[in-house]
Length: 130
Image 1 (tube, rainbow, N blue to C red):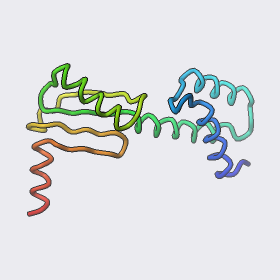
Image 2 (cartoon, rainbow, N blue to C red; image 1 turned 30 degrees about the vertical axis):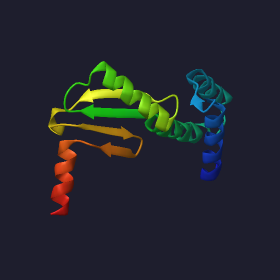
Image 3 (cartoon, one colour; image 1 turned 90 degrees about the horizontal axis):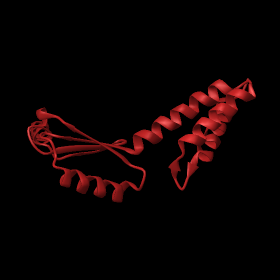
């Protein structure tokens, strides 16, 4: 039986091997998974499970979800994307969506960071203060 500490350590090593210039290389990820499966190592399933967890965390930290009350113009999308890339580094994937319930403004989430400049968010903050 492989210890939980060793599982985390091996999964982190696999994850580090998949990074190229701080960016995740999908081909390396596939190759690592194939190698671990082919090795038939006794603790490969827990290692791959934790490796998947690390991949999901990395993807969440490198994905920006931008919600706006109305569709954003291509110029504003490009400016927003450039600003977020400057803040969070290269390799950031930006997803734009419309949320009419925001009433106005925009809400941005990158990993656990949330920037809420929407009217709905302002009203909720005001209500919490009262």
